Length: 56
Image (cartoon, rainbow, N blue to C red; front, side):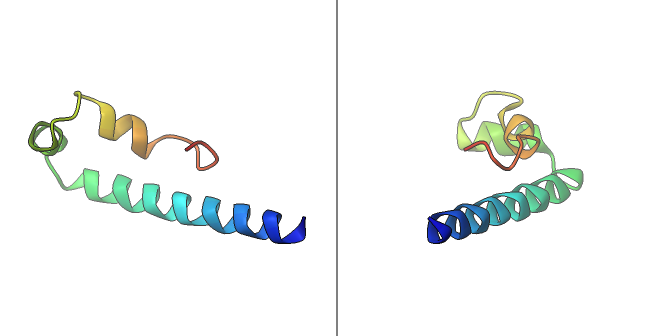
């Protein structure tokens, strides 16, 4: 059980760091161009970057 908890906490920490980096990158980038290039719906990067770390 303790191993599962440690694994979950590490996963959450990685997600939080990834989303923090994404938010920082979005400050200096044209997000609409990135979304269009990746074929993503408008606003999807913003939603992903601001999603709580415990949500997949």
